[in-house]
Length: 316
Image 1 (cartoon, one colour):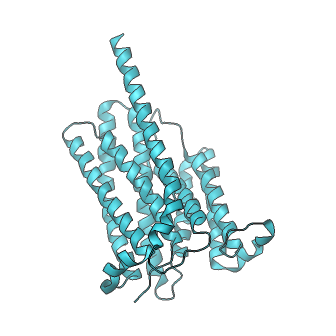
Image 2 (image 1 turned 180 degrees about the vertical axis):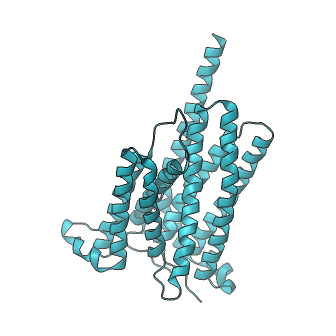
Image 3 (image 1 turned 90 degrees about the vertical axis):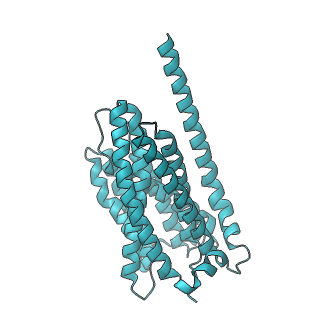
């Protein structure tokens, strides 16, 4: 009787924690695209794109879908894996990518009627072709997730990352270097966030020692991912902002302000990851700081999506 009551109490606490996590995530998913552009651009003299909120939200859904699928492809599924989120994530990613393609087909504006959308324009521009590639790649990932070999989704997911890397760097000066940095940066971010989600969903289904070992293996890998994220992030920032202007642009431009907020969030995530690792070494429960780390990672995904929708910094 006592053990059953204890199990029931633990189950209730788990449901409450999951409810709080989802609630905070939903609030962030709406507030970041809704309020972020105005807060970032206030007083900078910069103008936001007409569809900045919609583009930020759609890109946030797309990046979140990428992370969820990347984490499940990366993590080896054990004897009693949790129910896969990859099919639903791939479907959401396909719909979000299709929404972004519609915006591109409407001249990077939010269409108010079907007549404002020109599907033929997608094949005539670089952004349009990349938008079509992302729609098809997410569709292929969805088919892989529904099939018998879900890990094959790694190929179309890599194409999504490649399309994002190419889209973000149309500049005439060494665009290949910027695309390479973004490809590595986004790949590491997707594996870090998606991997943590997959691990936290798997650990409760394992015996305590095996769950702790799985968290430990993830923590070691995440340390390398964080190092790669930091290096590529700094290099990309210096490409976009000359060293002598970084301090001014981080506070005086919308792009810089959002980038600064993202940097602060990543620093907080690093602190939470360090705390979780200390708990693991001491034989204590590391799931609580890991859940907080996952929440902050979700916010970083939303902030990163907003960053892609804002005007690029000025190269003074």
